[in-house]
Length: 257
Image (cartoon, rainbow, N blue to C red; front, side, top):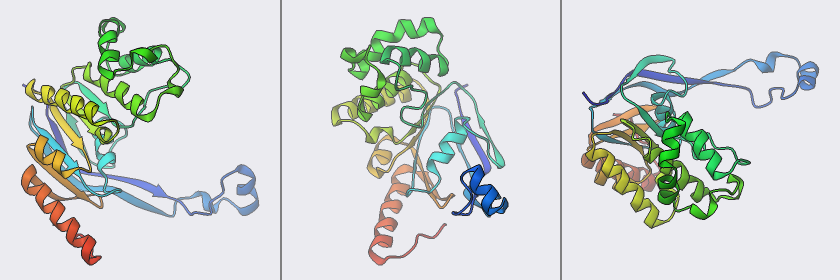
């Protein structure tokens, strides 16, 4: 049986503090401790439920602040929901935060070993895949340079190359395909298509409805932490584009369905 994802009635909140709360111990002593307490809670996600069958690819879209990245982090095990539960079966490969797990003062070689082991590979496996990782990332000339000299695009290449060699059963991708040149984006898409062919379950967050419509079977539209629409990718992306365009032209808001 392949890997699957089940998200049931998930909610995630964050504490909001007064903008003038004390930032140092001295300010707290002078102005009092009352400002240290949260003044409200912000729900980044609320009552989110869906499931992804083994081997399926589902796209997640929505405006900035809709809760897309928060959802992917929870599915990837970064934090826990305040409501509901998440069940994921299978080995997870995640591209959530560009450069997460990388250290700027270590070389590309050292970062590959550290990030590979953190991602679940043994040191022997990293050694076996090492040349292939840097060849895929097209960074052979920078193997022993510190990561701080890498551009953002180069770091993205390296992060994706490592994830591509983990051979995950579940792959979580958060907007990283928006970084880098067109040729490398196509290489990443081809590798994702290979994962799909091999039965990998994939969640893709993107601001590009056309990419989701082309690559994904289903799509989720998030707005203000709630699901507006979930279904066939072509239908959901068409509605998303239409209503976003209408809201932009009229200055109106998008209502949850």
